[in-house]
Image 1 (cartoon, rainbow, N blue to C red):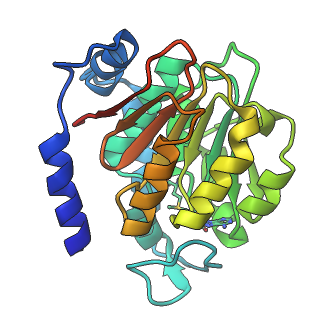
Image 2: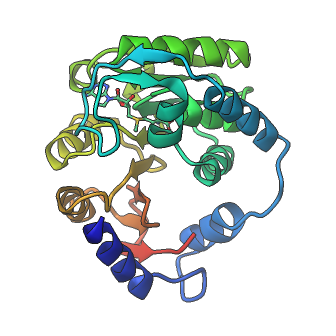
Image 3: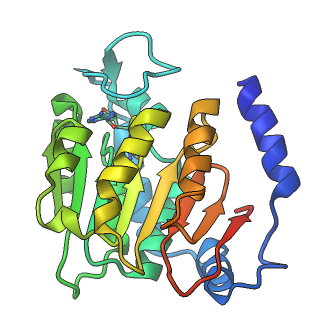
Length: 262
Ligand SMILES: C[S@@+](CC[C@H](N)C(=O)[O-])C[C@H]1O[C@@H](n2cnc3c(N)ncnc32)[C@H](O)[C@@H]1O
């Protein structure tokens, strides 16, 4: 906790808003997407999805694959508690929806489905007239069953949940997951795993890839991973928004690292 407070204070010191951002690509992203204050009707669907999970006190037996939980002591977990503690926040889900809408990715890969809170945001922002789909990975079968039921209940049809350990899947991904334009990395927050997923997915990059890493300041380990990613020769632009780190591989763009308050 103390680590995160110090890290956040460092972030606040270095961060800025759109002023002083000279890259038109980043300026547009910040002003037209990050700071877009419009109340989209899709937000009420996100709210209903979340509320249904928060009202669900049933328990499931969770298989823990990730870097461990700082909240849960047992693997028997109530669905509403998983939604509260492991799922994307309301504000972030709205932002993820806007990011998907803004970049119009063809295929999306989500690493870490949990109960599908972020998946629903990706799906709502997805442009249906583009052929493509959302592939989302989850190792815990009981968790994925709940996500599947919820996503069906809300009629999200362009999603495939793959129940498999991440690295096993990423070593030999299906065709759609071989060229995802948007990747949301949200599971197994350890340095080693994050860097290994980064390496495994590097062959999929294109000039317009958008990669989002969750929890880049979660631990010193994750901060080290973020530094290594920023310094990778293929990476040209990064944006640190504290919770999320955005990575771009745009060849035409000058190498630059931004720290932006959202
Ligand atoms: C933080 S949660 C994902 C939250 C979700 N994206 C959301 O916003 O609602 C991470 C999920 O990844 C799964 N997970 C973590 N490490 C994994 C691994 N190595 N293989 C497969 N699943 C894993 C966990 O079971 C957990 O459900």
